[in-house]
Amino acid sequence: MVDVTGCIKYSKYYRDRLLFSVEINDDGKVIFETKENNDRLKRRELKISSEELTRIYDQLDHIYFFNLSDSYVDATDDKSEDIKRNIVVSEGGKYKSVTYKQGKGMPLGLLVLQNLIEQAGMIQ
Image (cartoon, rainbow, N blue to C red):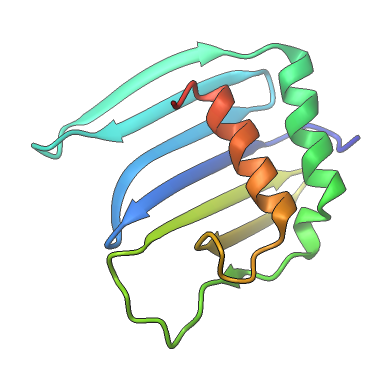
């Protein structure tokens, strides 16, 4: 398992506008932020179990997250209405950011990771 000494941040965008973000710290603290229609930031904090945290970090290992491409977004795709996602992981002095659109040649394991993070943030 990865040495859990950092955090994971997952963000979802629509037309380059932030819809929400989920940050998971190495102590299991989860911070969920979303923008309301009036652009006010709404924040919720919760805690996940060490088992849930382990599942997320095991998935990072499983997909070799730090070896993934930085982007799975086709540069020629100008459909700005598409939903973009970004996962940033910092741990043990390493940092990696991956931006993607679902179905754009992204590894299936990235979708599994996304689902685990969304479950941790209690996003339905």
